[in-house]
Amino acid sequence: MMPLSNWLCIHPLSATTDGSGTVSLDNRGLAYGDGFFTTMGVIDGQILWLTHHQQRLMSHAEALQLELDSHSVLAILQMHAEQLQQGMLKLMVTRAVQDVRGYGYMPTTSGSACEIWLKSSAMTVATTERLRLPDGCLIPMQPISSAICLSSQLACLPPPLAGLKSLNRLDNVLASGELQGIKAQVLEDNIKPSIGEGLLRDMSGRWVEGTMSNVFYQLSDSPLSTLSSEKTSSEKLSTLPLYEDNANYLITGQWYTPSMAQSGVAGVMRQVIIDALSNSKHPVIIRSLQDEDLPQLSKLFFCNALRGVMPMNRLTLLSGEVVRF
Image (cartoon, rainbow, N blue to C red; front, side, top):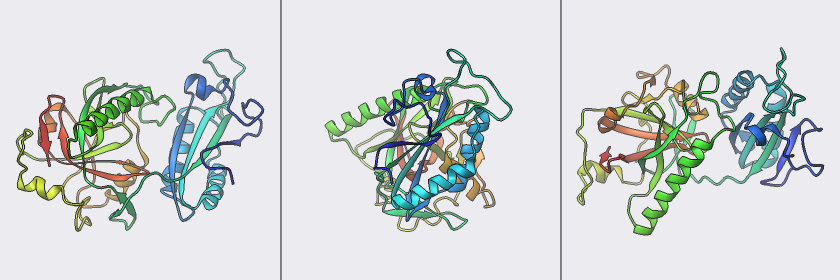
């Protein structure tokens, strides 16, 4: 088994390394962001949401014209998951070095050869609650937190790049830096509740996702609340340690999630939830989230494959006003 936090090239053996197993500066993922990645949780030796991760491997390889045998890759991943037992696996796929100079590559009917890198890590995400989906699957549910609208923006991308978890994540990097600065100031000022995630819009002005997560929301006709020193009765209830019974959290009311057609990452957990609710009374509706919708939010949560559902009880707008739910 490879040591935790070390990268291992699982394909091919002749990858672009410097001779000691370290990635070479000629690697196209490092040079151009030419590739994609996915991060998987492992519990009791099993990869969570394995089918959805396989779908990502196949769809991303097709979009980027890479030759990838997803079944062989999954067999290797499952072997490492059994050895790891508890933790995280991060898989990174890059286009192999090309004979063409610069950005270019030679298209083929089967796709470009690729290099596949894998890293095992300890699980750093702690969860005490789990949420049961309508299909019986259990997903992590984090303690209630608050969110804030960020001024950073996501790039709008053309098909087939929009929605991909590509190695080009500089917009998320800058947004995460903005969020960490806000969190540090909140901690210094001893302001509560804590901020769990930032909401990001793209260059068209639509609110799309979090810095590391997708977003789901519900709407109501409730007026905008402004920040005050006294909490309302509903806010007092919402700050209790999660929900005594969260069994109906996802199946009560109509959930919406923004489209990934021009920006953002179509996350694994996003698709898990969409699929799980597809045959329910209220299937998820793909709908843009606009500025005028924010005061009408009645529920909001972020999600990703490692943290599961991250419920929020308030959202601070760019104006400083606060929507509570």
